[in-house]
Length: 110
Image (cartoon, rainbow, N blue to C red; front, side, top):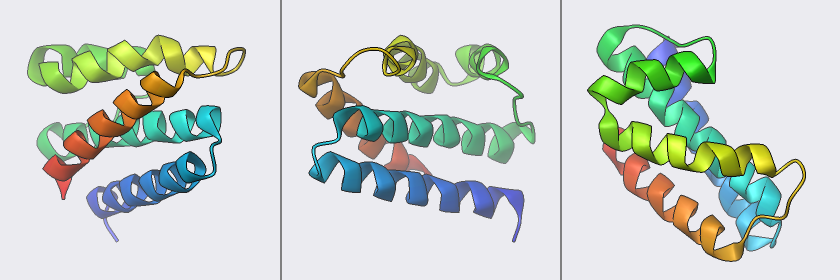
């Protein structure tokens, strides 16, 4: 299996995990998996179009910002909340919002 297919499979697996956690009411864990889905959508897009995989979030944001502003804006918006999941409870409205953005962006890679 190639890297692109692996990334696509990971998107599906992370999203499925996020949905299961969401249904169980595990908001922080669900948010983390939705965010991981977003990161993998970004990596899929970067690999598909540029044949590059970033080593860290800083590099990912640098690559996304000029070429994929919608994806960059979504990812950079949720990034501080993702970091907060280690010490704070995710707000239900934020969880619904990230889920909606993941569903919208996931459709672009299917």
